[in-house]
Amino acid sequence: MQIEYVYVDANTPTPDKYYNGFIRVYKEAFSLHPYYEVYTDSEVLNDVWVPHLNNGLIVLACDGELVVLD
Image (cartoon, rainbow, N blue to C red; front, side, top):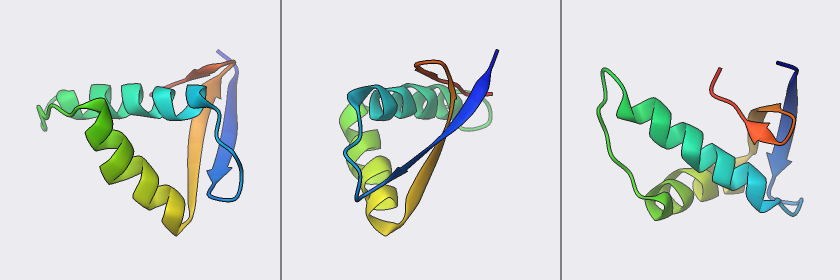
């Protein structure tokens, strides 16, 4: 695994692969113990991704084209 950090901000167009990967990882992380939460893609995008992007910077860990959890 070759981890590269990708920085995403509101001033740069974001490829779909980054926010789709973020959504997948977010849903996976919060579906596990101790949270057991279930989110739709729209909830993660609109309630997490967009507000964080508008207020600063999102840092993603990527292995090639894939956003990774760890």
